[in-house]
Structures are given as structure tokens and as C-alpha cells.
Image (cartoon, rainbow, N blue to C red):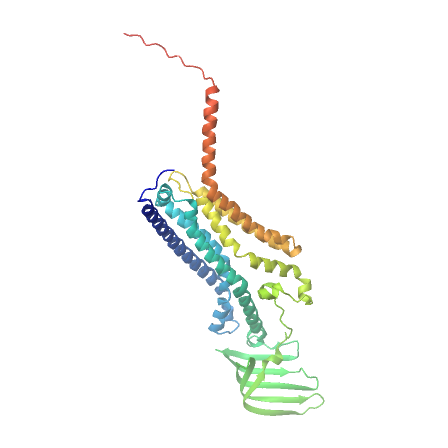
Length: 411
């Protein structure tokens, strides 16, 4: 055992400080790339989805606040889906940049082990996993449920969604509605005929009307009109003039059934402890099972994608060694992983055995990618040694014919 020199501890401390500095540098680079990619992709996809909901403002007459609320409720889902992909792209970008600037080569020459290079990416991946787990288990179900309630409320507003300007619209419950034209949020030239009760007919005629909400109920406030009432067995009718009159729109709604939430719209405790007596659960028990395990395994995919990217590009390479093939293989591996995960989720709907694939696909990807990332250099070094040993053992036994060169004569 060699004696320890007095300067060894100081040298070790400086080396550790230098390695920590490099890790923080790599983490900042990867974190900045991840945030930029996540924000950019989320914004682009959100704008695309928002454009599809413009009919909330145009044909359905909803406010800008309702439009932003409906489209904003999709953001947690977008962040959950995009975060693993953003982490994968950020890891590839960071490693490519480090290699392009020859920083990976310098780190490798300085003795930086692959485990130390992996640490900043592992820290970022852990943060993304916690974000995805929080959104998947708590935020996404609440946003889906709120979105379902808003869509149901919008569709229940037959004034905005069913009746058309200048047309007489007859509902199945015996109500006929008509308005001449729309002026902003107000309706002009309103006519309503109510025949829900067979013993009498009630008609409302008003110059102007507007939908208003009070205590969670929707009302149509009529202005400057009359109410006509006529009994079934009488030719006489009574007429009452009014300046303002409120009509409860809830009585005109055709869909009064109770809302049944789908598995993805239910909270995680409701999936863990479902009501087994519920008719919808007995019919869709497989979907409840698949949805639950999809949520519980969602946090594994950011780690799997990060390890795949690191296994492909985590080794220092010269400019002559192309990295395009490695990136292409990483992309193929990610696509294959997502396809297997979707197939496992579909299988879990039909059989409980499919749950094994939901967890097995990302865990197996992590194990294989981690083994390739940490043991790849050793495996290649072992292969090179085996080739040299084979050359040393076989070359002496090969008898090559000796070439006889002609003798040169002096002139």
C-alpha cells in the first residue's frame, strides 16, 4: 500500500468541488432546455385545441371567461403528456451540445464516471416524475370532471345551443321557442309557447330578453311583453302585460338525467375504492382497472425516456463518430415503449393480467437503458480485449506465404 501524501486530501476536495460544479452546470442546461421545450409544445398544442372551441364564443354565445376556462382545463393533461417527451428532447439536446463542444470528451478524460454524468439528469427526471404523479393523481381527474360539468351546463342551455335565429324550434317536452334576431347577448322578438300541461297553454311574447343566472339557476328575463293563458276546454284566454318577467329555463331543458362520470373523470380514491353496486362500474370494471394503473404508473415514463436518451448519447464521441443513428434508435425505442404501454392498457381492460405490462414496460426499459448506459463502456472494453486476445492467439498459427523479392544488381 503506497503511503498517503499530505496533499491528497486537498486534491480530492478540489476534484469533488470541480465535479459538483460540472453537475450544476449540466443541470442548469438541461433544466432550461426542458422548461423551454415544455412551454413551447404546450402553447402550440393548446392554441390548436383552443381554435377548435371558438364556437363557444360564436355560435353558442358564451363569454370569453367561459372560453378560457374550458380551454384552460386541458392544460394539465397537455403538461402530463408532454413532460416525458420534453425531458427526452432536453436530455438529447444537452448531451449533443456537450459532445459538440467537446465537453464530454474533456469530462471523460478528467475521469468523470458515467454515474456522475447521470446525476444531474437523474435529479431533473425525479422532479418531472413528481410533477407528472401530482398532475395524474390529483389535478387531471378534477380538471376532467370540471370540464364535463361545464360542457353539460353549456349543452343544457338550449337558448344558446338548440334554438336558431328566425326559426320556430319545438322541443320534445312541448315547448316551442322563437326569437327574431340576436343583438349581442340580448334576444329580440321573443315568442315562447308552453304546452307541457295538457289542461292549459301558456304563451310569452316579449320585445326583448336576456339570459341571466341567479343562485346557480338560469333565467330568461323578458322585457316589455305579455303572457297569454288559455284553458283546454275554453275559447277565452287571459292576457297579462308586464315590463319584466323571469322564466325559469331549467324547466325547458330536455336532458334531466344525472351525470355519470367516466373513469378518467373520477378521483383516484374513487378508482381505488369504487362502488361495486353501481351499474356503470359493473359494466365498465375493466376500464376502471386500466385507468387506475395507468395513473399509478405514469410517473415511470419520464425516467424511462430520460434513461433511453442517456443510454444512446451519454458516451463521449469524436466528430467522426456520427450520433444521428443513436438518436434515431432512441426515438424508435421511445415509440416502441409507448405502443407497448398502450397495448398493455388495452389488455388490462380485458384481463387483470394486462396490469403486468403497464408496469413492466417502463420498468424493463429503465433497467435495460441503465445497464447500457453504465456498462456499455465496460462491455466495449471487454470486447476490444477479447479481439486482441484472439488476434494474439490465432495470428502465430496462420502460416502466410513468404514473398521473395528479386535481387537488385549493380549497374
